[in-house]
Length: 422
Ligand code: PLP
Image (cartoon, rainbow, N blue to C red):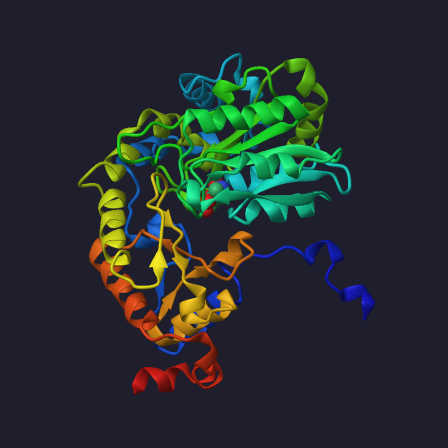
């Protein structure tokens, strides 16, 4: 029946992090095969516990979250966010410029529709976390993917961005640090991005959810702090820095000249008020979390889990023939490149599937991040360092002699249990 068909606007939406291969991996688990899931950036799943600061902020305050709160978010939490973003150099903002949502995932869904008419174009990085491209489609727009260049530490390619601007381009998305590359952008790169937005009157959507997870004594710079004269929507949240993915806590802050954002804000207000408010329990911990910068800092300094896990991963990656990578400076992802000629790879989803059934390791291939060559995959560096070293060694052994054309996955694919028993 036509009536029950999935809407056409869904046809471009993809979610490979928890997509078909993930479902296959779950089936393997049900059959008793343990799978190492390196597909999701969910720290709690790898033993990153609830920070004490958060525990204390919740207990004793549960009554405060019983009713609906302000549709923009609880006042104390918006004040804390405003303070945090001001400290990062974003000027001229007040708690009225802050909108709290159920994770950045929900925030994006009320940030894009108020701006986009059908077929308006939004520049989105490639590779990038698929939330962004998907959300542009769902808002009626068209994501136009711009290149982040592996040869230049995965920084955005300014010439490529400029070449893709048309009269329909409305916005430029920047993810810094990026998922899946873990690249952190220096000031000069950020200034060039701001300049493009300035010249072409674009709104900047800047996803900074990994801003507190930066390594090697580098500093994260908020793009909005360099772009006072431009409308900027800065997004952030607690899923990664405080390992609180399940609390669904994210926000956006609108900065830049007020008269330019007035109309847009009215749209955001309509959408946020329509859904009443974000989960109050998640919001209640924001002031404590933003005072507790030690939790994220401890994870990324030498001796901290994220730092040491990256070290263990890259030490093993270096040993793999036919594989190259750019060391990440932020987040907990690395996005290695496969020599597709050597391995005769033409389909990265098949590569990920072959790997899953040969090693019981679940990875997301590059195409899951809107990367259009079959030559990359992402590793989530959240398990303990020993587990990661072992996993990367297994990937190396799998690749040793791998030739995609010669692997007949069908037999393995349909009988994972038999494979395990051999
Ligand atoms: N933005 C980026 C770049 C991400 O990598 C993720 C999750 O992995 C999100 C947003 C989603 O964050 P949240 O848990 O706040 O919805």
